[in-house]
Length: 394
Image 1: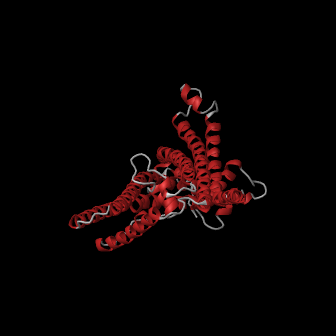
Image 2: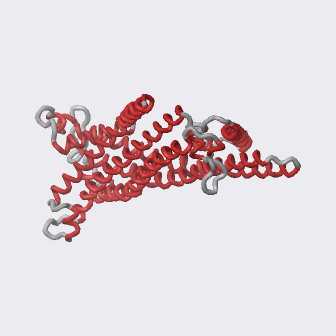
Image 3: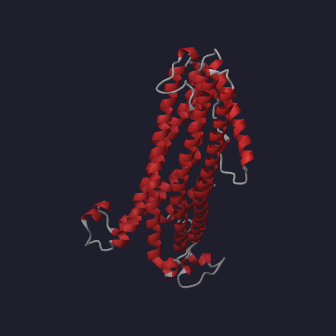
């Protein structure tokens, strides 16, 4: 829904920037037509055209949606999830101590069982740590998304000419809101690059895993580095239990008590132990032809998602640069008396041209981005399907 509203909002902004349909649909730009449905106070808000009113509704939606998303990221996906992961970590540690204590009473030691337990413990610990890092990132991303959402309130007011009237802080407050959005966007640009790099690296790792384990049995594979076996978090979630998603990876549930959490953890670990034991004791190939094709498809998906993230970065960087020009020309409003760095930043354009071109570039890029968001799942599915069919034929 957010992507659809973003597409509509910025497409309308592009229409306004280019003054499209001014002759074929003149009512779009006629404030008198707005007054047929509602009479805004004069002399400023009465200037609102039907197109601007439609834009302001979508901006208000963005204000509410982004603010809620930022709040949910900080708390639901961040702080509360970290609290839950802390509970899970404590329960895992308690279970480990209880199990170690019961083994001391048993004189008959089973080295293989100890090794399986160690593999399970390592996978659980790695998963919990990975989720904790993700929760910390959610907090940071939420801190960036929240002010972006709140800043949309001033864009909403600007579309209704409220800032022109000097209310809610006037034009200076609008510029401050844009500045806050620009600052908050910088870390998000970094995360886009990081996500793209991680997705491409994941594709490479999956293909390396296929090459290493394809048609090989347990006895043919020696653990690498300081690992206990070929099973770790990545290989388990790709080979042993495809798409493994333990309960602690989901959104935090604050009303689950410790006893219920303990039962959920026991059930998760028991399933993990069964799968590890079965995989290490079996005589079948670790990665057969069917699994190899499945993993190749997963690698292809990750590969395409990585380049999609790079595309998002390009779209948002151009938008960031374009909207930045509006802030720059506000503070350096005299064309003839500007530092060389400012003139270079404007690419030699005058203030008016730089402001218009930057604003249009941002609107256009944020129109293209939701199109990619909406179409990319279908495109990736089609590309990976055709690639998978080719692999099967070969």
